[in-house]
View (tube, rainbow, N blue to C red):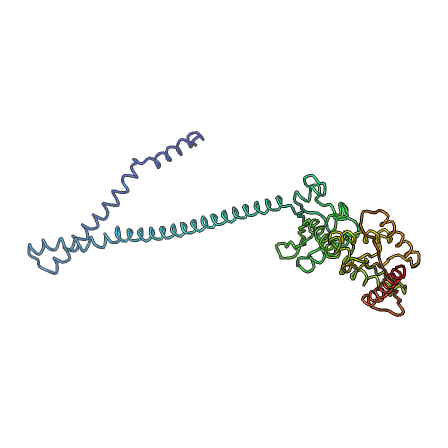
Length: 414
């Protein structure tokens, strides 16, 4: 009859239990057999060897007693070798192979760990470097921003973000043209295109139309993984104080400190430009050369401070006579030059106005002497051009003629 499923499971469990039991009969018999069989083989081999030898050799009792140990050694040695020493050698060799494999794995693990440590150190250094760079970018007073090839903002530091009026990342994707004039956008886009095309940094000076401040810009390439330029970094430094200082220095280099008029260098610079304009437009112009009379007498009699005061009075008379756009300069101790920019060429009207202003200055009083100015004119004709020095020389000659005439008139009065 067949067995039920429950009986089959019981049988399987029973067999599994027997195989798993360390004190089962099979587990005990197997080692005994492994020990008994070599012993039986040794004894049988020994008796067989003695029997064979006794048939061919007659041995005494002493010889027989020596034969048994010898035969035992000859028999036991190979058996011990093949049953114990050889497996032991194989086990030792296997252990060495396992040890070598473990050593290789250990070295491999050490290599992996060293690589991991190096990578961790590199990542830590990179993070620290990025943090330092970010801190530097955010703490600087310069505006720093990044644009792509289409002049769209990719990133900007807090300084520039605050200047542009952005909060957070509102700038992302916005175009440069949204916040700058078409002329400024065109110039900036050309600079960006040049940086992307050449891969070289470019310098640019930019005046903001928003507040009129001046900025020195440095546009530098940002390279991608393949080395191509993918964006442009712009560092914009506010140089308005420097520009103002340059303007002040330029003004000082062109201005007479005492009178506030142009000095010799300033007048020469502007007059050269005016001569070019006259040549281009084929128009004439005149030059007035004026001299303060009796400056040496004023200095010797009333002191140099009073002489300086007289020179300032002459400058004020010239400013009242001519327009702000005209070039008024003090080119020497008591020598003044005026080059009008306007089209007024009525010399009689100009001289009348000049004489009236000198008279009004004397009527104001406050000085122990009479302010007197001698002057002369020269004309520039584009059809017969001359240098600015020649023009001044002709006006100076005319002025001395008037000065001599005034002296002769004074003598006649006496």
